[in-house]
Amino acid sequence: MSLGALPAFLDEAVHIQWAERLWSEGRIAKPVSAGRLLAVAAYGVAVPFEDRLLAARLVSVFVGVGTLLAVVALGRRLFGARAAWIAGALYILSPFALVYDRLALSDGFLSAFITLLMLGACDLAERPPRWLHVLTVVSIPLAFLSKVSAVLFLPTWFIGLALLSHDRRRVLRTGALSLLAGLAAAAPMLVSFLRTGREIAAQHIADPASGDGSALAATLADMGGWVVAYFTPPALVAALVAILVLRDRRAAWLGLSVLLPFALFSVFSEPWSARYILPTLPPFLLLIAGGIDRLAARVSRPAVAVVAFVLLASAEGLAFDKHLLTNPAQAPFPEDDRRQLVTGWPSGYGVRDLATRLVDESAPAPITVFVDARATRNVTAGLDLLVGRTDGIRLVETDLETAETLQAMRREAGKGGAYAVVGPRPEPLDFRAFVSNSAGLALRVQVYERPGGEWAATLFRVRF
Image (cartoon, rainbow, N blue to C red; front, top):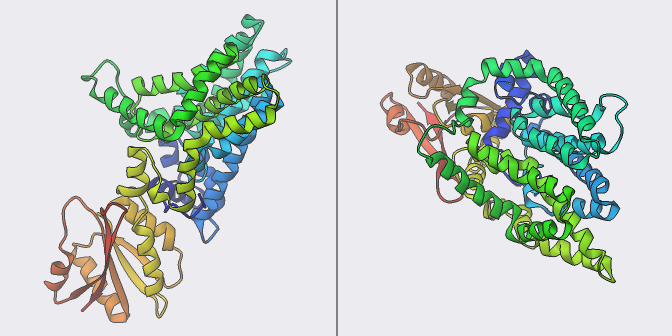
């Protein structure tokens, strides 16, 4: 998927907006209360660039490359050089990685540091510790700074220490010290999150003792869609075969590193998207790589066997990849991801075309665009990201139904180009009738829709 193929998703625009406010105004409350400080700070690199979306997505790509390198290193540590390259190939071909390693979100950061933490578990389990292992101590706070849901992935780290070590007592003791040091480093942000992140927590944390089980059933149904779409049936079969072929502690650890976060999320959380379980992708692919490596060692032409097995495991994912690279709107996303990225109100489809039209309209002379502040947030945040710094375009976010806005539109119409953008809002607005009641004229320029036909926004030119 090229970096510009998928329009700016709402959460991307929000991350970049937070980054800009963090670095220009020192406003840290939002990223801390959302538990995503590290990613937001990193996307500050994109702030000086004209195309902030492209720059931020490049940052995400670099983080994805880091995850890939960590997967290769962990594969080498667990199974050897051949399995390491197999795991790397599987990661590159994975549609799950292809989607989320190219979007300016926080989940790629979390996946990178959880994978590094797994690498640190191997280090703790196999080598006599001379001091608190830097990789582990650094990865724990960075994982929490990436996203506080890191807490749901930490148990698999301790399981790895227990399964892989020969001197279990010593290793678990050292691991506990490493965890305490890492948590101490992350404590300031965690304390701030606990104080200010109640709204985010309320949206995502479920009480397993309450309710009739409908939330759990809905989460499990969503997860089933994620597994089929992103992990794919051929790869799931390959993982099961790998467990049967390997039958050792490495396979048990990798398998639990996939299954346990799914179980914890389903019981204690209400995740909205597959990206919440992105850190389960590396152990899943490493498990498959270990199985392929073991099977290839049993045949006379292992190189040919490796290529054949990789292609078989990735067969369905390659079809997904093709759509992502050519036309993301046609890609077989799971239902909730398709709603957020393509067809639903958080999607950037429609808004991107609107931004392109505004650039064209501003070519002859500067224009002022009044954007409905009561529209869905993807309209206001998306336009600010795409054309907020464009010469000749001045965006004014305002309530279009007020007398003050009408006066402002009258003034700007007298100067030249005055436009208004109306988007989906809680209460419908007949903007043309509203303007005509004040002796004005709202000329509809174009209506913008998302794939599937859902209304995204309408652009009007306003005259008096």
